[in-house]
Image (cartoon, rainbow, N blue to C red):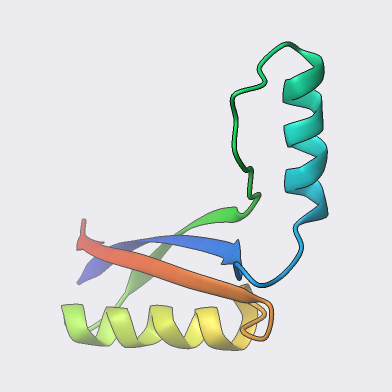
Length: 83
């Protein structure tokens, strides 16, 4: 079966996000000053083959832990759907 995984990787709230701070400053310079905070992350889409939904989720989780996210500094969440 074929599956699509949609993955969001974001810096942990405890970690400073310099890109987010730069974007917030840029928004303020553009006159958009009511933004409380900006965090910059990654969105990743994977298409993969697996025997079941649970297997696809396990493969996606392993990919996140081993390659796609630095689990010391980033958190991740994902959803897997059949295609």
